[in-house]
Image 1 (cartoon, rainbow, N blue to C red):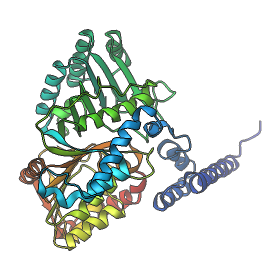
Image 2 (cartoon, helix red, strand yellow):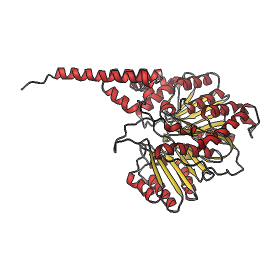
Image 3 (cartoon, rainbow, N blue to C red):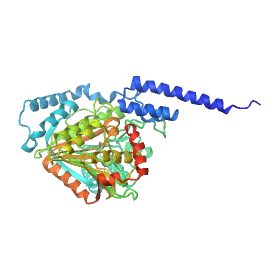
Image 4 (cartoon, one colour):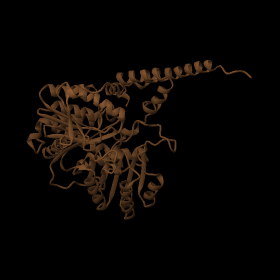
Length: 488
């Protein structure tokens, strides 16, 4: 019996692993055309971890097979009129016409024009806004609005849990479908935890269900990137919701390990709801292969009386530019007095970091709040590292200890703000599909700023001196996590 030469087998396996690495290297450098920092990190990972690095890259980063059909609205005839409306709005703005009912917002005209041109985001100022910072209040209001729906309910969530809150929403949608209301439920294929047999109940009741970017495999989804992280609900084309809350008991503060869940969500009534509807239509077309008509049924005339300015801005890997991030940078540069940012994950690129540092060094009061509880350890330690850098520029940083901070907001000069699904990290800016409301309304901005200041009472300030006294073990964890930041 011939004896196996394990040394020779190992050498061949290692050679094979490096050949695979070479193949992926060619893909990264010549076909993927990633940003230089991300490219270098992946090349390092491939050659430090031969074989394993290739597997990680296949799961996390390859985009050769990425679908290109997300941007259908640019080519679709039904959306031509909305594009014409956008062009007319841009022209009015560029010609210097009076568009603000509140003169205090005039200095931010260029932000609106930028987002209109860059992101095709219509600006409307006939909106009524309500801010939610508590999960129970948000879901009580949402469930109440769904109960009053007469024509349609369109729901998109990244996470839908199989628990009391998730089943409560599903049961309510089933009842509305049985009443004859058109119900559409879109969930992300990875984020969703509601079993198919439960979702099938909604289908049997007459509702429609779709999953975003599912895998060919039944129990495993290899497509860890390009997830639909949006949270949108549109009711009768008149009421819309957007923000950070997903659907699960932890968002009500019922998960002991996370404690109280501090998040921010918006309820919108007005023309901005139409833009949330369009965003839902685009995602629904991709997931369900069903084209919904742009008709008065889905785009009814908004009720008069409200006066809040809003732009709905989306971003994702289907877009050439990182539109939400660019909007954040534009807001930071426009600041004259103060900036308040809440985010669970802070892994910025150089444009965000430098903008915040320049603002702080210029005497602007820059405040940043992150959670104290890591739900993703590598991301958490990378966040601490980047926050530590900004302390040297005079940025004030707070660590929220009242539970888990999941709020994704920025407020500038207590005049303008943004609330949505995008974190201040590379994954939100480049890899996931996100949506944010950019708000031009002093009362709403003041309310969001007041919520931040209230949260300071449940936070510890992270000072530069305190940060420098961190242990060598924490320094090590930060260094490793920061190295992996471009691919987290």
